[in-house]
Image 1 (cartoon, rainbow, N blue to C red):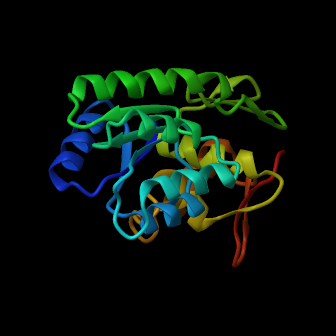
Image 2 (cartoon, rainbow, N blue to C red):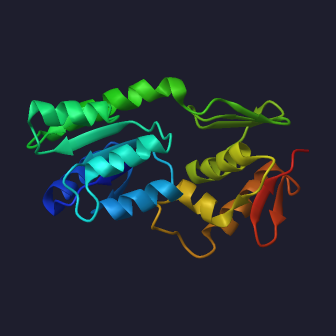
Length: 219
């Protein structure tokens, strides 16, 4: 799962990122509200862990902006604001859960698990593009009824191409499906993954849209 942590406390943030990474999650860690809003405009996440006391743009503003944009990504508030009125305001603004600092990592991880279980029912449905079938929750791809041996990153790229089909997906969008919004792999990482996918699917399955990106071309 890809998670976004918006937290300006370096010690706390480092502990949370480490704990979540050990559970197999990819975590983008941002330190202020303005960066958080920018990340949410350009990337998608399975869960947002949001501190209310963020610099530049406070967390409550971020929360309201997310919900105003129609984004229903689960949001877990992490904050030292423990007054009942603050909790009510956060939940009424659209937060899914509220955890008061200081908290134990075990409780945080339990709440993260609960929220992620809740979204399984609205996870990306199985996709079919011609004879290609993708089962996102199982990370399984089948072509003509036969399972493809794909790496996790190859699957993520193929899934993004299938979601965008029949439109092309830009290289930047494919990078965001693999890495954080402000990260990047090696300069030719996407090209390497596309090359491997063409080898496994068939050379004509993925078309290059010059200056735009890549597009699935069902056979």
